[in-house]
Length: 154
Image (cartoon, rainbow, N blue to C red):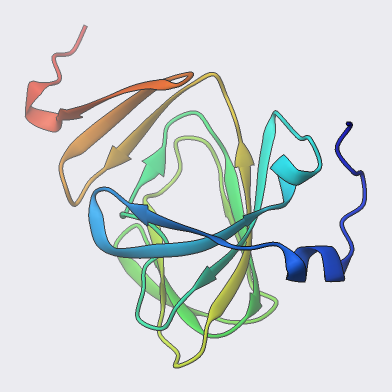
């Protein structure tokens, strides 16, 4: 059966969120509803993300090739971008171009922070985690996480 083209607000509300912790950050917990997957998108990931109070969206990171954006729907938070903190709230938009600054979002309020997040789904990408001094090489379903110190320039 083909995927629906339209997801109504009621459809999205009825969808069960999937808890997505981040393996490099024990404080990162996203409650994710994948709108893109539900409608059959394969080249673009589109998600409704809910962050519980005090939780991070991911590990502080930057993509070398993929682009992504975040649009704040509900709640209050903090975006750490290139080591600078910025208060964010409903209606704010964050666009992260390829090879852009490292970033992470934290829910600073006492209610859920709800975000619309989208990004490319390239077959290959490289993601840096500056605070952990690690680099993730992604190739389809395979990935390799290496320490910055182990990377040899070619």
